[in-house]
Image (tube, rainbow over all chains, first blue to last red; front, top):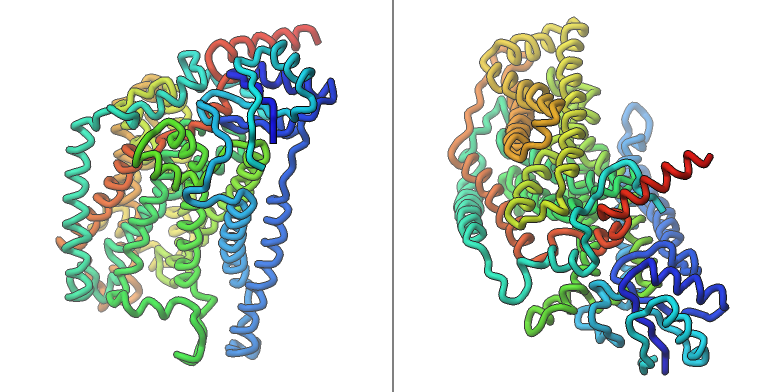
Length: 166
Length: 469
């Protein structure tokens, strides 16, 4: 797949460029940055479902752990203390800690799965300094002329056409 | 996004993004020589670790807990003192990373990585003690809920000791994952800059991470979820450690103040250890532009404030002992602590934790590396003494005078303690040598906004806006 890339070495210039792309309705396919730029998420409407999934994991974990504790302490081996089953508020501690452990493990697994992270994974696109001080903007080839003009006007240090594996 | 207006520049010297990478990785770049001090320090800590974990721990396991100073009257000695001390230190990483994240304190970025690393090694050191203090580590499986068929009953979910096992495991897992995931982008930076075997190692460690938009979004969301959960976890873990004591009906242990007191104490000792470590990192790696005087000043202020809370807690304990009217409580607090044979450790604790940090009221002290370093060490000693007072003193003289006993540690106790210090030191030195010591991606995120020029401009702009209004 052919793409046009524009490389910036300054996030202020990058944001100006992105603003221009949004104004001119040129879709930006991707941006590789060496650090999180939260304004980019807002401008290019990038979302993830990890927070929602984290909440779901939490609810599942609470239900699961409570059921487990209830089964062991009330159903399977009831301890009668003063005539009542020993289902006390102490459960809250284990519910919380167990929930944290479950959510942390599952969130990590989700992150790794969604990003397909694994040792020695092949890196499909490399640009020198893309994790150091360069920011690479990807635009589809069909918008080549407009994009090239915007890149030039907003101070991109390098403009190239590249072939990217799908 | 949060824009820092009040605090001074967080990174001095008008650094570009490239400069940040170069500065942080300077000592790891090809051709950079490992300095002599590193080898010397590594050797010392390695020897300590080998003696402690290679000789005294096996000796305890082979010969039994009789090798320690513990006795019938004082059943928990140095092992639990050290356990609580290390766990306390371990809380700083999360305190820095999470509490300061939640409070939007961006100055954490130069420090959080080292603090998190410290957490991991401190929790590892702490985890050793519960494992060996049962005397027969091979029987530890009984504490895990592996089914009732083997023993006929489930673990007692009402026991704080069981909560402790689960809480510490959770804390270690959470902080290790938080630390590792936070480092993945920095591993990618190192991967891109290195060659040969090093490149392969960091390729594996970075898991093929590339900073795509979506990747950063998921990265942030995952870290926020984990961080948000880890913050209350810190509070719960040390509260649970404190309930190990406070559920016992022993004068001096049976206190409702224990959970908050322990949590605050943990943060106190942790911040002190962070201060010690950051001063060393700043000095030896010449990173004074990243760990600025303002950073150290901010840590010192927090320590001073927490020290006031500690002082109040000591006073409240004394007052409640008096106010309760219980002769047993009064015996522990007024006789043993204030003037008895444990008075030296008690007053040591009070002076080191409540009085010495008050020197931080003076700007000169907060701005002097020597003072900061000395006081941070003093606080760590003070916090160890506090745990000594809690673990040893109350059980040594409880309700029945006929049972009163005395505690004296043995060489084995000392050896194992020094062994864990060795383990901690080796871990921290390895971290300094091979891993990114500061969160480069987070520093860059502050980047432009917080270098000197931009800050001045920002302040000027805000001033102008206010005037216009």
